[in-house]
Image (tube, rainbow, N blue to C red; front, side):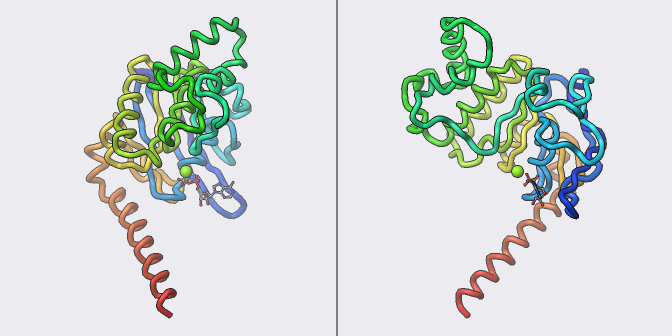
Amino acid sequence: MSTILSVEHVGVRFGGLVAIADLHFEVREGEIVSLIGPNGAGKTTAFNVMTGFLKPSQGDVRFKGTSLRNLSPHAITRLGLARTFQRTSVFPNDTVFDNVMIGLHQQSAGETQLRDRTEALLDWVGLGHRAQEKAGSLAYGEQRLVGVALALATEPAMLLLDEPVSGMNASETRIFVRLIRQIRERGITILLVEHDMPMVMEVSDRIVVLNYGRLIAEGPPDRIRTDPAVIEAYLGQGSAARQAAASVQEAAHA
Ligand SMILES: Nc1ncnc2c1ncn2[C@@H]1O[C@H](COP(=O)(O)OP(=O)(O)O)[C@@H](O)[C@H]1O
Ligand SMILES: [Mg+2]
């Protein structure tokens, strides 16, 4: 399998804060790779670098061999690297169908062609039967599928998903896992940022783990699950959360 994306020693600083340091990993064509790590580890920052929303202080990202350093987000999308955002934004008062049509209108095509394409995309993400409903009336999980349809509309070779199942219930998550597999079966490579560990372990071929902006582990789910550095990173977060919760209770009783 050939490399489709390579993250080459990327560093990002925000003033004095090192958000990412020396991040390096590759994604091969047809893989489903997850990028995980505790809150604030630098996952979204890494996505923003890969999609041209943020210029790295150091290093570079290559997509299909092309350096993304000087490319705009739009140019990167045109190269075939698409993303969904951590938060959904649909036009709530337009129908689901029109939401996708609006997104497609940047493509030069006839009206009939656009309608056919919209229909096909909605079927693909499982929203065909909701096409004529207002996007704002969809459940949260379904609204996120509109975002996936819009990303797929750009005909990407690779799709970056930022916490796609956050806020979804168990059955919505299951449906989404199936969708991810279907997308990959159509030849689209996937890089996933996600907090839902059972879902990540189930769907990923490989997992890359960040902690405080640094790569701490990389490998197949079975190895990541038992990696001491990974366990410690997540336990650390758990105990910090417990401490925070305890101090809130103390304050309440004072
Ligand atoms: N635009 C920004 N300006 C300043 N600090 C930022 C900015 N974006 C992210 N950060 C900081 O960088 C670190 C990584 O954030 P982020 O990439 O959002 O983490 P994650 O997505 O893994 O939760 C955090 O400490 C965050 O507060
Ligand atoms: Mg994030």
